[in-house]
Every structure is written in structure tokens, then in C-alpha cells.
Image (cartoon, rainbow, N blue to C red; front, side, top):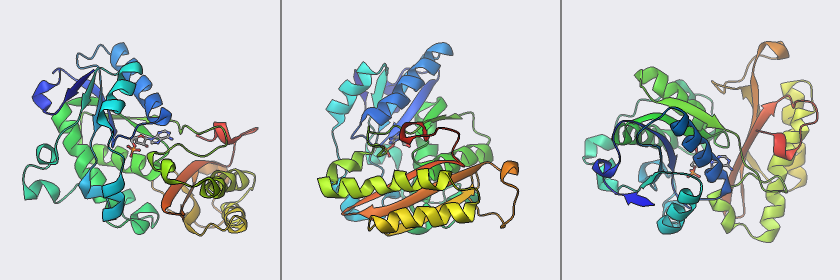
Length: 289
Ligand code: AMP
């Protein structure tokens, strides 16, 4: 597997990019498999490129940035097995060559209006928008795969690309979960056994919401489940799926695509999760998207 530090080392002519911060797990590998299949289907010369870059501009806590797993050799081996063609692991200087390149991101409303991740992690989506735009430019990505696990991020990047009139198509991949329902995350390795059990309240709260028939009842159901587990959420909400704004009470359910979203700290780890709302018939932890 080639680990490229410079964009010139990548095969030109277009690729499908899978942007990651490394510390890869099975959830990321599903994105890589999808990216590789699409790159093959479209005959893109650059194939599937996985970027591994711990982006300093999207961290709101220095401690989180410092302890973020950095395992690029292992990540590259996993990417090779999943069908990637190259790993792009640029330096901070390559991504942000000047002080100006860290400023003035193009940010759609969903990056700062909903009061969800944007409120809980100030500045986070500015960093996400900056780095994604830059990585798309550096790699010449024709498509980029993002996980539904980070739902607001997926909506931000989709809307940003639309605002820019960019040639990069955003492709969504479903959330991968462990057998117990916990959404996979590079940060799960920092959970104690006890915190992991408590963390299951997030996916359980989404499933409970999915059984209710109004967003208000759904949100109350989420809070009950979280409360019983002793988890104080940053938010537990049911919103319009792409803008993530709340809609007036009484909005006809069938006229809107909804998403239930939840985040909160468990021990030293911040967990987030989301599912379509209301749940489709027979939805279980593994079908929650
Ligand atoms: P990360 O490096 O973890 O910030 O994420 C890189 C990409 O992987 C993002 O598009 C995430 O949404 C995606 N991702 C992370 N965890 C999962 C998961 N459990 N299922 C699906 N996609 C994921």
C-alpha cells in the first residue's frame, strides 16, 4: 500500500476519496469498500484514496487532539485489505500552507444554525469545512464517501459542495455498529467496560424514539432512556433530516424526512449517534442507519 504524503504522489485523473482521521475500525472499512467499488465502476484512474489526517482545526479540546489515535501503518494495511489504492497522509503544512488557508471556511447554515454539534463543539464545523474543501482540492476527488454516523457533518459537507458548485459528489454510507448496537468509533477504545454499557443508552434512546408517533413524544422517550442510564445528553432531538432545524408542532409527519440525533459524554468520551425517524417496521440496532 502506498502512503503518499504529497498530492503529486497520487495517481492523477480523479479518485474517490474517503476522508478519515485514522485509528481505523470496521466502520471506516465499509466506507473504503464502497469507495473502491464506486471508483472501479466509474473507471477512475486514481481509484479509492483514503486520507488519514488528524485535522487540528476541527478539535475543540487540546486533550482530545493530543490523544487521538495515530496508527498510520496499521491503517494503511487495513485499507489495502479493504481495496483502497492509496493512503494520503499529508502534513499539517501541506493541508494548511499559510495562515490564511486556516481562515474563512465556506459554511452552510446547517454548520451553525441547528444548535446541535455546532453548539456543543464550537468551531468544529469550520474546521471540517476547511479540511474537506482542501482535501478535495489536493486529491482531485470526483466523489467522497462520508459515514451517516456523523449525520450533521454529512449534511454540512453535502451543502458546502452545493454552495461551491464543486465537482465532488458526496456519497453517504450507513452507520456500522458493534453487535450490542454501539456505533463504532475510534474513541470507543477509551471507554471502560462500565461506560461502554452506559453508552448503549444512546442507540437504545434512538430506538425508543422511533416507536413514538410525534417528534415531541420521541424526544421525551429519548430523554427517559438516557436519564435511566445516568447519561446527560448534549442534545436528544428529532429534526428535519438535512437542515437539522426543528419544525413547528403539528407538522404532518409524512411530509418531512426526519432524523433523530443524540450526543453526550460518557466517562471521558463524547459519543454521538442518529437514526431515521420514525423507525421503519422491524427496525433493530443493526438496521438503524
Ligand atoms: P473519523 O475519522 O472517525 O472522524 O471519520 C471518518 C469517516 O468515517 C467519517 O465520514 C465518519 O462519519 C465515518 N465513520 C466513523 N465511524 C463510522 C461508523 N461507525 N459507521 C460509518 N461511518 C463511520
